[in-house]
Amino acid sequence: MTDNSTLLTDYQNLTIVDLVRAAQTGDRDAFGELFDRYRGGIVALAMRRVRNADEAEELAQDVFIQAMQKIDQLRVPEAFGGWLRRIVHRMAINRVTRNRYAVACDPETLEATCLANGSPDGDAEDREEAAAVRDSIDRLGALDQQTLTAFYLRGRTLIEMSNEFDAPIGTIKRRLHVARKRLAKEMDVLQAV
Image (tube, rainbow, N blue to C red; front, side, top):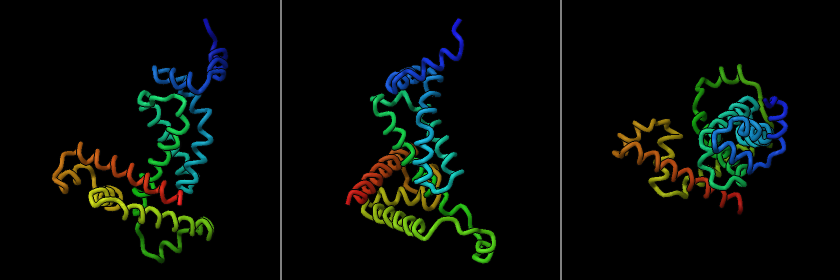
């Protein structure tokens, strides 16, 4: 009979590739070790994206849940870290765009209840990033723009979009997937400039 401390030590000695391969076969302890190794970096990256500690923790949890559910789709185990970072990037965009209009109130209430959170530099960076996203969306094709705007800015459900665009839900999902990838490429091109 093997005791748990021996198992934990064995997982700690495995490489990332070995852990990913074990996790792909359903080994939850191997995935737990991957979580332990990458959690800090993923939370830090999430914090840079959403700029709120609680949101970053929640986003990191969501990232690991998605990674656990989809780890069998990772074809190159060596790319696990980069794959996680892409999930963070995509999920952060989703979270930020969906929550943009979540709270609405009059200016007096807002001023009375909100504390200044951030700095002028941070606010400027946020405005620049928002402008970069808008510019990137503007450079996309009309269908990509319509799809992203309907889902993220107008908050349409897949069913509503299916009716609005007169297309099956599967087609709408595919359009969203493709539009997000194109937006990410545009963002990468913009950052490289």
